[in-house]
Each structure stands twice: as C-alpha cells, then as structure tokens.
Length: 172
Image 1 (cartoon, rainbow, N blue to C red):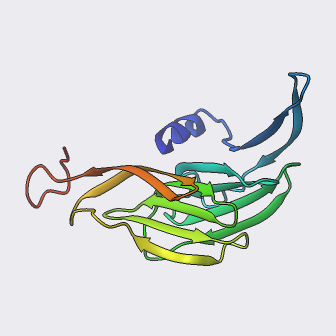
Image 2: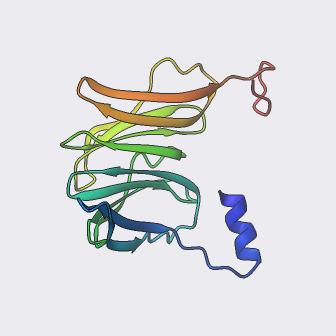
C-alpha cells in the first residue's frame, strides 16, 4: 500500500482514504447513509480493518509511525473516536479488528511478534496488548485476521521463520 500511495503522490494525486456507508433496504435498493474521511495525519502506512458494532463502525489502522489508530464512526459518518492505542514500544502493521458485542478485539503483526488486545468504546484497554503464544523467537508475523465468535476469538495469520539461522532477510 505504501508504495502505491507514493506512486500516486508522485503523479500529483492527493490520497484520501475513507468510508462510504450504505444500507440494504427491503426494496433491494442501497441507501446512502454518509461518508467519512479517515484523518490519517501520520501518513498512510498499512491498511487495517473495519468492523460493524451495531450502530457504528470501528476502523483500525497503522500509520507510518507504526502506532495503532482506532477510529469509530456513526452510521451517518460522523467521527465518534480518533485515538492512538496499543503498546508505544511495538511497531504495528496489518492490524485486524472485530466487535464482540461489548468491546473491540484487535490482533496485529509487529516486527517479531503478534499481539492481541481488547479495548472499550473509548479506546481504553480491557485486555492490554499481549503477545500471542506459539510464535517462534526470531520469526516474523503477517496478515493476522481476527474474528469474534460466541466461544471467543479466532485469530489466523502467517508466521515466517528464517531459512538461514541468524538471517533477518530471507524467510520461507
């Protein structure tokens, strides 16, 4: 994503990411509810995820400073929350988000670990950032996706381990 954004900016394009909210009505027509531009003041990093929370949308994103940004939007597109969350020492990318009925659950890759956390609607931690178990030391994580289920959380992702011991460049 970052490379394509730089390419578009080099052509003189302004890059703005956002949401367009629509609803399906009983007459099989889509109804426009609103739109919201995500305020990516820290630059465009890696894309994140979006989850429907009943009467709002939550969006998680990792800007160029490798933090985690949580946005909440009403169905009309107005901003309800714009907040940096997570562990300041972690370099997050490719975060994923789901709504469990009470809180937002987040799984995200970092440089050498994957983290899980839950936050309330204000972005305050309910379960603080916790490293996921079973990630080999020195491995890289990528493409983690979280889903909320009645039994808990389901998290899927990739773990890349060095193909040459001590190597941080080549992964299989």
